[in-house]
Length: 251
Image (cartoon, rainbow, N blue to C red):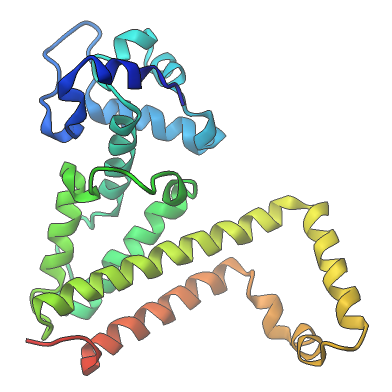
C-alpha cells in the first residue's frame, strides 16, 4: 500500500484523529463517499489480495487521480478503518433478531462468519489497527445488535462481554482455518508433496496413532466445506449452551 499518506498526515494534525472523528469532505467534483471508497478497495483486495491494494489502484477504480483521493483518506489507517467498517456492515443482520438470545447470538455469529469468508484476507490484514472496530458506524451497529441479542440472557454485563469476545475469537479462528484449507487445496503439487512426506513417516512404523488416524474415513471429511460449516455450527452451539449453563457470570 502507498506510504504517501504518512507524510501527509504529519503535516495535518487532524489526520491523527480516527477518520470517523472527522467530517467527510465538502462536496467536490468528482466527489466520493466513504462507502464508495471502501467498496472499491474491497473489490481490489478480494480480486488480487490485500498486498495489491494501493491508493493508486483505489483511485483508478474510482476514476480519480491518486492525489485527489488523499482529500478523503489521509493515512493508511483511514483506509483500513473503511475496510473494517464495510465488512462489519455485512455482518449486521437485516430485520428482526430471533426472540431467543441463544438463537440471536448464533445468527449474528453465522452472519459474521459469512462476511469474513467473503473476504478471507481481512482478519490478518486488519489486525493491529489503532482505532477500535466499533468506532465506525457499521461497527457501532454491529455491537449494538450483539448487545440487543443478549438483552434477554441471564448473563451479567461481564458475562455478556465475555461471551461476545469468546464468540468473536471462535469466528475468527474458524475463518483462518477455512482459509488454510482453501490454500492447501490451491497449493496443488506443494500440498501433494507434504502429504507424501507425511505418509512416508507414517509408513516407517513409529507413529502408530497417526497411522490409525490416517486410515479413518473421518479424516477425509475434515476438508469438506460442508463439514467445515457443520462443525462451526456445532462448536458455536457448544459455546452458547455453555454460557446458558452458567459457565459465565450471571446477573
